[in-house]
Length: 217
Image 1 (cartoon, rainbow, N blue to C red):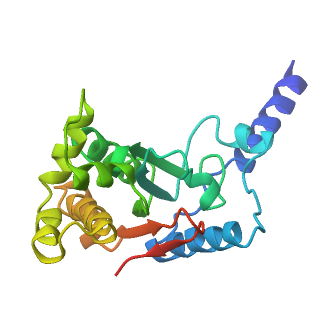
Image 2: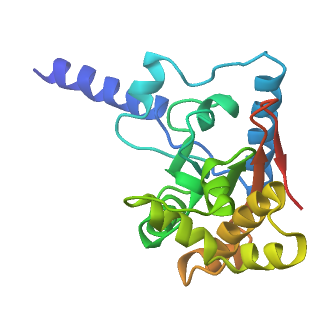
């Protein structure tokens, strides 16, 4: 029995050593990893990291995503694919038009405060149907109306309409920047992390024609 207990104890130690928490990434290294992954995706040389049964076992007890990706529910934009990441790498929040409310902000806070994510990306995309619906106007039914109304209330969109008119590209970028502003103003969790330099929030645009992700100014 003693020998059996020693063997079991040794096996547990080996298992725990193999599943130690990964080092926390800085916002800069997290951003570099995402952009490198998208470059592989665009060049059709994906590495498909962390997509094995071993990774499932490695993450079965905990998760440590290095980045949060807030993006649209559009079926053409699967974050793990376009950034060439795998299981446990990204904490993904998806809504039509990548709109943010209290539940989404709380989810971001959880990923940053409790899971250690050091980067939040707000990822919009070209040809966004939600923004198109807002610009085209007309009647909308059901809860889709709430999506259009939320976009119409964004000050960034109102400024773009007054300066550039119904410019789809500008309004898509304005919507992305609105999400970034919401996150950067989130008190007290996210603003505190940003001031400490432990968190960065980056606006990005995905091109559905090329697969390329660009960080916006």
